[in-house]
Amino acid sequence: MSRRESLIDGLAVVDKPPGMTSHDVVARCRKVFGQRRVGHAGTLDPDATGVLLVGLGRATRLMQFMSGLAKSYDSEIVLGVATTTLDAAGEVTGEWDMSGVTIDQVRATADALTGDILQVPPMVSAVKVGGKRLHALARAGIEVEREARHVTVHRFEVLSLTANVARVSIECSSGTYVRVLAADLGTALGGGAHVRSLRRTAVGPWNVSAATRLDDLSESAVIPPAECLPWLPRVEVGADLASQVSNGKVLGSDELSLSGDGPWVVVDESGELLAVYRTHGAGTVKPAVVMPPAVS
Image (cartoon, rainbow, N blue to C red; front, top):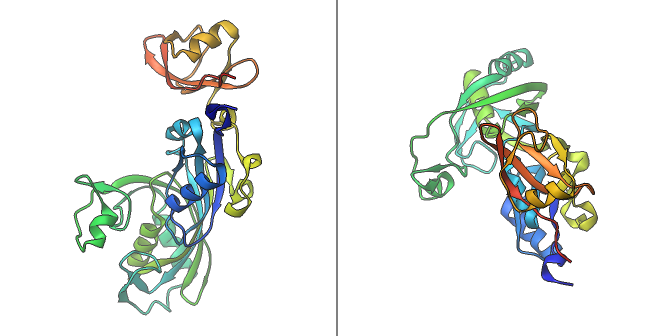
């Protein structure tokens, strides 16, 4: 068996445990699957748990289409205490008596933070400013100005409020920081707040019920490349076109019978992924990713 044949291509939907970075999960996957080409989409904080998408082999090239997927979270937000990291791992920077805050007030404030909003990334994050990661600057004791970003909070539901701890469920666009939402919630209520626990319950079409614990990972849990982008339109081509697609040829939209704006997943008659095409010019399309079948 050749090295190419021994590699596994596909997607592992991992249920990340607490206490590990997303890079730690990637390192574990490299050991489990015995290959170096592994990557992830959508970083989770070390203390956070839940859905982490891990690409294997050539499927790592498909992860560019996953980075913008919407995400869902369950979280516990502690009202009355602010921290340096906006979560329980940081040092306390302020305390307020917020025992008089009612669940109706919390819900009304959460509603005001729903929709298209501006959000400033936290210092402890992977965002780059001036070519440097914010978390690296934060570790060096440096705080810099961060530009506010447009994000969308589709749902910010307050499930309960007990002893200043609000249990919430959130659906949001990619790039939204729940920690910042929590801090903004506390500020808007006249005090401060931080995230005590965070669990990502879904990324795009995959929720925790589809995720596999790290200790249970095996090849049987890997989603094949042709099924990694189920939200994109899919087109099947015959043998003649399959050869051109596999060679990365620019084609006419009509040759592939494409409609809409794309991107489009292109598969052969056996259902194997050949490429992902994007609009190239007037009436033409070009592959963003080419994945010809492995040669035996």
